[in-house]
Amino acid sequence: MNFKLFSFFFLLLFVVPNGIAQDPLRFEDEVSKLMSMNDVPGGEKVYLFTGSSSIKFWKTLSTDFPNDPVLNRGFGGSQMSDLLYYRDSLIFKYSPDKVFIYEGDNDIALGKTTLEIMSDTKLLARHIRERLPDTDIYFIAAKPSVARWAFQKEYVAFNQALSLWCGTDEKITFIDIWQPMCNEDGTVKSHIFSGDNLHMNAQGYAIWAEVMRPYISD
Image (cartoon, rainbow, N blue to C red; front, side, top):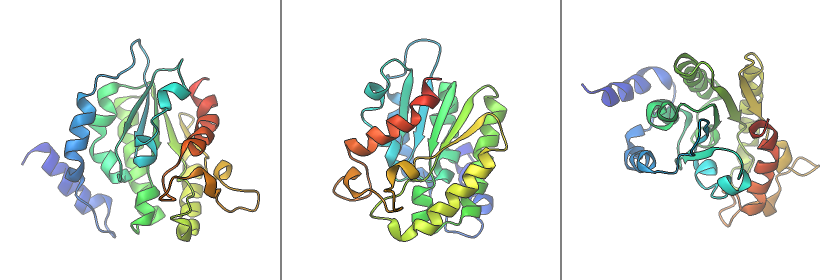
């Protein structure tokens, strides 16, 4: 049994015990294409962004941070368990000085519990810490959206759990993008999304860039 097949069965048996695990191999082609790209920043440092479509579609990442060695390795539709599976290809391959992770959004929409997502999160962080002990890890909060506003309570619960856990390790940071994407009355800002009301437009990414600037340019 090859390593990837073994890892897949491991995820099925242990990582998502109470949910329905999706086959991570559905991303094989996309991940292979990402690995073949030659856009890795020159120089000694790499600030890696990875996770689901909110990262993948951040097309202005390099122009938002023109003086920083940012690298986008997002893959759309992914869950925390998928990034865990592809950690060698999408994280360890680049030995980043900083890694910014956005997962949990799709997990919640597909019915995973906070406990299940946090199990994957902690395991991923443990692997990163073991392989890249000097790398700073940033977990980005699951964002609010018009399309998934029915899951508001689940998103808030996950973000609270993620924030509390990140606070227990000085090299793991929680980045709150939920509040800046909401109005003063707590509702989500509808004008910052594209036509599907799930993915962000330029105004949405401008908010993300502003929130993350202190963590990138520190």
